[in-house]
Image 1 (cartoon, helix red, strand yellow):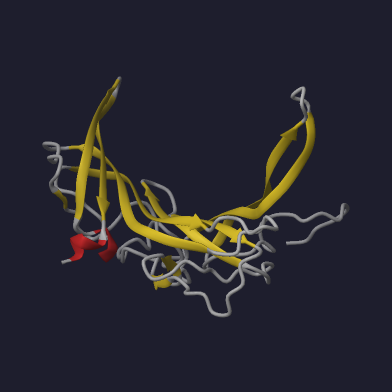
Image 2: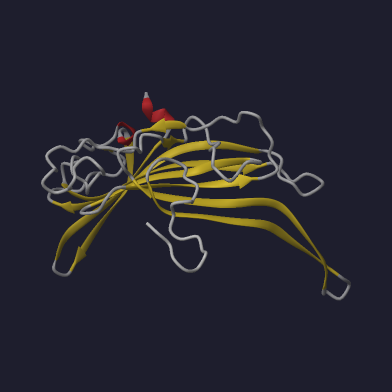
Length: 252
């Protein structure tokens, strides 16, 4: 790739990355909290700008090198180029398979520039280059470079059109210091969720039952179904959209 003419930052090549993959988007929303103080007639007299933090969003196409995906059950502190001060804490990580598309994955994090810690606990590692797909060399050329469609994963009551696995972690910042800085934060309440889209070929699974997927990654097992949505549309087969969740207590 060559650039000509204007001196601009083009594409995503130079963007920071939370894990290995072909970056599709990266954004940073750097912000302060605003508090207004009024005078005796209700007009704004002054303002305080405090609580500096930034929301970071990252999404990439999964490739054969995406074996370093975030496992937020172990920790949240992400090492990110360009953020040499403070701590970046991830609160969401997701993987998405869609029929006929390449698998994507992404994460959401918050940068706290005033938190100082020498070795904050980092996330564990998951292999996002899943599931194993064989026999696709006649479809994906050259083969083995990406995860294509929902091939390799099945459900007993339908054809899998889409699957999203989310990891969610709550972040509770400390109260601001007298100088208006956030000096600490706690992460807690780890859970995983699944959103599954099926072209229905059988009966819908029951609410409260264990979601059973074949060929899916190991971190997609033992989820409990919370709701099942049936959708009928003109000139299309009936679809099931299934939601399920997992907490650490389900592992035993």
